[in-house]
Image (tube, rainbow, N blue to C red; front, side, top):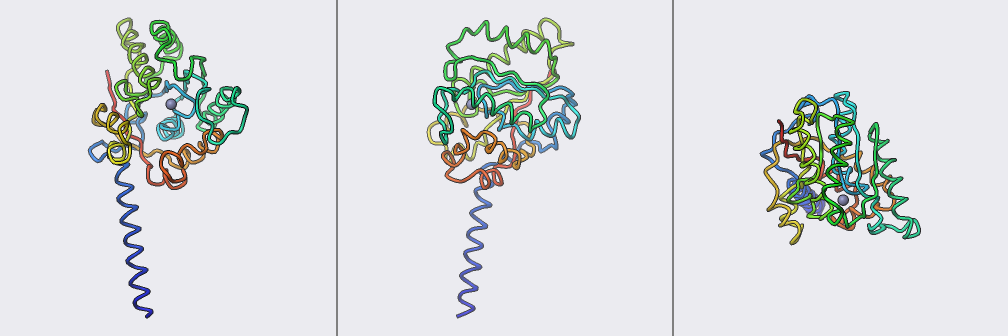
Amino acid sequence: MKRIVAAVVTALILILGGGLFWLDSLFEERDAKFVPSIAGELDAKSVLAVFAHPDDEQLITGLLIRANKKDGAVTRIITSTKGEAGTPLPQISRTEELGIIRHAEVLKNGYALGVKEQLVWDYPDGGLADANYEKYVARLKNQISLWQPDLIVTFWPESGFSNHADHKRVGRATTEAINRLRALNPETAPKAIAYILAPRPMMQKFGGETGSIVAGNQPDPTHAMSGEGWAKIRGWDIHASQRGYVQKNYGLPPAIVHRLYDKEHYYVQTY
Ligand SMILES: [Zn+2]
């Protein structure tokens, strides 16, 4: 009897272990070059992330932490909207004040990630693509000129990590701002862009129609690095109004998801 129990337990452990190994593999892109730090790899001493919503920075915690702690780089974030149109998960404030709450949450998470300066702009959440494109590009261009980062991190314009229109617009406008700065003066313009990419196996397997669109419109990642999963788990506590986001999207809590989804994948463009 004991032997049978032992055999069953062993089989269950093997099945569970195999399942976890399989789940983990869905969050990997094996052909990307694995590096300790994207900023370190590019010798960047100043990094600027340009995103759409409070909590988008959760996608690049590894890049930000390692740039700062390991490579001594200065890190900054521009968040283009206050995220006021998001779904509260759970509701922790009056709905009309969600933008104020999320504004504070991204500042708190940025501080926890060692970010030196942050701007949270007031473009309409969900309406960034309808805002005046030329003015948005000019505003980005001005801010990049002021801070003069070596490395910019943003969304891939064709897929935006989740096919969100705001994400795609940020990626496009940021790329355009950099191109214009390079045309003016390549010496002071950013030397590289790192586009954060979604892990395609997971997007294809479980991402539904959106996942297929994202996976089909992304380039092959050039680099991968540790995502500092612990910082993402902490970040979802800091983003208290979005704490249930991971559970809703993946069916598992952040403490499990970010132990499996523990890498960040980038397409790096250098000049
Ligand atoms: Zn977003």
